[in-house]
Length: 276
Image (cartoon, rainbow, N blue to C red; front, side, top):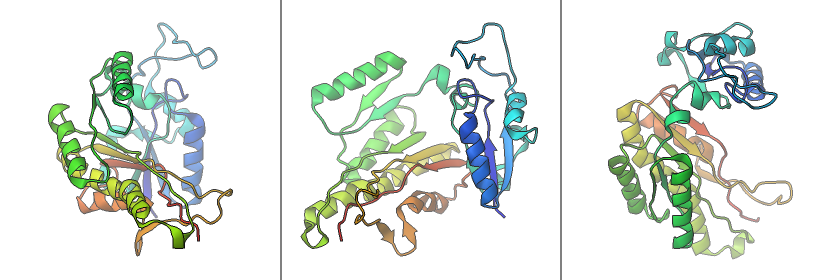
């Protein structure tokens, strides 16, 4: 039976864990036959939010562990008493509490490196606006996601110029559909390079730094087109026994990083638009 840790950050979306997500997560794990360990830090919340008005309540304090017990019906432990070696996987349900109560992200923010195609002036406008709005360092790197050496250089720049790469978001994606016999070779190569290979190379070059620091996160958000209105789209398998959504966890295991140490959140799997 797999043992899965669920990290809670309070009770309520605006100052803790999003209740709907936590309950659905716990239900899914129960149905899958997993042993669940709910945990939370024994610390005060950053603040308390009135969920009816959305306003911070002055002078009120609540404990994250105590509030998390509401969701877990009391079956929750202090996170400091849980060892990563005891878990097979770790899940953090949504909610602002993850940024407010589990780390300093909500108050300190994080340096950001952007990548993408577009008009240079618009890219700079976006970069500057993000830096001003959030008060953090924002850089842009124009690496071509079809070129492994440029991906490696982009990761290296983040490591050296920004003090390390802690979170990698793989969200580049392109799409093309055509009857399979008419699918242009160059389009196929481009879709594979950007939707799949770029995920591999980004993860490959980011993992060593994450491993050295003992923490990291890789989010994969790739284009999903296999919907009911396009019934002939075929899902890509990267190789026998390896589907796109299993690629990054396998890469992490190869680096000797356990799931509970390197939180891998695969948000969607890649699909290629190939009409049979």
